[in-house]
Length: 268
Image (cartoon, rainbow, N blue to C red):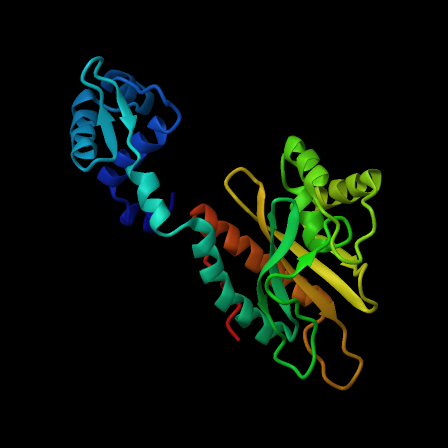
């Protein structure tokens, strides 16, 4: 750990968070001694932290067996600002910033009951571009967004997704073996870069926004259009790096990891 990180540490807060994270793994609760041993802390410091957490309503102590469990307070707090809503609120201005720098449109897609739906969109600042309207339902097997959503989810969910999916307008029937090949490649690369299967001259650049379990909760896609006139906007490789960085930043924001400086380098 760096000296800067040490300077801004808050030991008491860290102890409290350690207790909360530990209890999250034990639905039946833990005794004070078990908590102290698991965290390699003294009984007295754990007692003080538990007393505070119980008083503030984050932890509940059962009167019969003196076991400590998490309350529903953190869940209730999180519902005041649902994570998906916060993600969209955060993503929208950053997507607009990206389009101003890349001179390309971009959109964010999510899965809803088997459908792949565009939930946010930002248009290119130029005279022309390809932007999908919010609410548009697109294909699962023939779009970068759909393939990346499928690639970053557990196998049992993948089977359910394919079975539940209703073909979008113009989407051909899904070839399960072909989809598996795409998924294997995307998992290895971490993204999809494919010629559009719905429009000529478009290259779809698609990147997952992941949750703590590595499951794609959303996909950031840029339908890249290459200019052939005298204007020289960023290249496809440059836009690829911009989109990949933004998707990783949105992942860090959603997961609360703090491992990245959000949206660093995307200022126009």
